[in-house]
Image 1 (cartoon, helix red, strand yellow):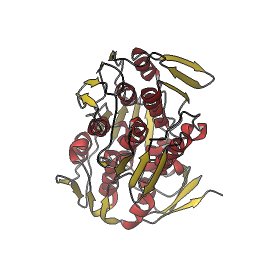
Image 2 (cartoon, one colour):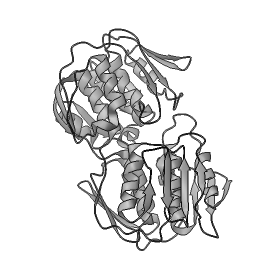
Image 3 (cartoon, rainbow, N blue to C red):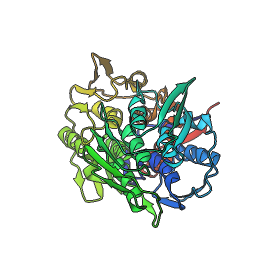
Length: 420
């Protein structure tokens, strides 16, 4: 386990290039095993989740290599094998191997996935989709067994609730099934469009992604002809926008997709941040005064749950009381007691997170309970006077591409060390 040590108080300036989307990457890597040819991705973020997914690939005799943002995967010699439970439990997105393996072999056995503990995130919608496609599902001792002895067939799947993970898993299982599958009340996130683009470029027939009805006509083979460039990470972008507004003396963010962040950037502008938005970059000038705002997280294209925590340190600088209501994960509050240790006036009550104006933060020993809580602590640590030590920093490294290097290039003072 690692820890981040931050010497706070430096103003930041310069440029930062946003990496490929974590939430696309962790779906694309399992999707690669559906291909009958080697595949290549570029703009791949250098994060722990990628390396853990590569360990899972290796257990199935799928060769992979990752250098300078390019990930090569060769699934042509894939074999069915027991997947390493430690790697499976290290990230929740390992559950995408359920849909991919079911699509490839018509069966799969996985231990329950791990990842961030941010409240209940059941996989019942995933299993319901697999059953509709013709799979038998059983659970025993923390392990899910999927088996479709007669193959998979097209089906009509209605999601009881909007779920990114279940929508992706249903697509992965249906893309090589016989017949046509219709997913209703599907999630609309850009990362789902990115996945469908990759699959369609290999010969899949997926239509309607980006709307709430997705249609998939199954195909017999998928063959990669070109490198797939992963879309920019909108959550990383939002995190650096919050940091730049809080501490920046002119920060340019490159490789961004502003259309994916409109709910977020509109809130920053409502706070008084004079964002200069171009087609693929955003400039954040020095911010002199901030107004409080109310935020409610919603499924895309609403305000992303992954961005409510990185915004809280900036909210603490506003002149008044800001409020966050997280309708996606109401129990996503691990950042609150840690930020309180640093002097932030933040609390949770009656399903709301309340952030009051805080004149000054001070360094403290804190713990990153999950990825986005960790991002909030990084921003607060850079804002604070003195030294902040963030324990369980692996949770941050799971989701933020080369974060120490990027922060130091912006004039931050951050280093990473092994825990004692």
